[in-house]
Every structure is written in C-alpha cells, then in structure tokens.
Image: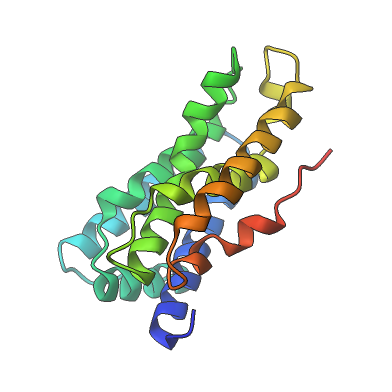
Length: 186
C-alpha cells in the first residue's frame, strides 16, 4: 500500500487477526479462551462507542485503523467467531462444513479491501482469505471425511482466488497479496 496511513491500518488489521489466532494455542482450557475472545469483543465495542482504547499495542493500532477507515466492530466480529470456534474442535462432517467455518476468515480481508479502496467490492477476496486460513489451520484432526480432500479444497480455493482477485483494483490488491504465498502444511 503506497499510502502510509493505509499501510499502517493494514498492518493493524492483520496484527488483530494474528492476536486472535494465537488465543486457541495459548490457553489450556476453552473457558480461558472464551474470556480472551470476550475481551476483544468488548474492546471493539468500546471503540465503536467512541470510548477509550484499551492498553494493548495491536488494539491501539486497530482503534486508529477503525477510526480512520470507517470500520466497525460488527464487521470484524466474524474474525473473532472464526478463531473462537477453534476452542471447541468439533469434527467437520463434510467439505461444506469446513467452507462454512472458513467464511469467518474473510472478515479481515474484506475490511482491508474497504480500507484500501472504499469503492471496491470486497467479495473477490473471499477465496484468497479462505485459502490463507485453510493453509494455516489445524483442521486435519477435525475431519470426519477423507482428509486427503483438504488438499483438493485448498487448490480449488487458490484457483478461485487467482481468478477472482484479478477484478480487484490495484489499490485494493495489497489486502490479499499475502495469500499468494499460502501453502498447505503437512
């Protein structure tokens, strides 16, 4: 992103995303994770209400990004729910269930696109965000179907992402440029 403030906001959004992703790995029981996710929900609601931003570096940067970019807590809430679902590793019955879960991973990318180019349609970033999330997920142990199909899902998402992000404006593309680096672990 060429604009310094937009670049800072992009970094803040993805730092927020990273903070959320760390929670399921940093707690010994789900209740502790729920408390941390509740803290993030409350902190975002306080920002929406125009209140003081809590003392946390990623949150303070996100608060600035929200205020400058016109974002709301409501549009970032799916990112919290996406990561919170990892506290209770329910099995996925089929590919549709995995895709439904991955939908929550699109919230940050969509907010990033809107920040970089308010006129852009953020929908083309969904497949890229989902591929990025699947590449970094710990979903293998939760599959109740042939886990080998995850590689096919990942490749399909990557192909869809390559095709769909061509429609993004050059200003919006940095929101998902990192997804081109996604590779499945395993």
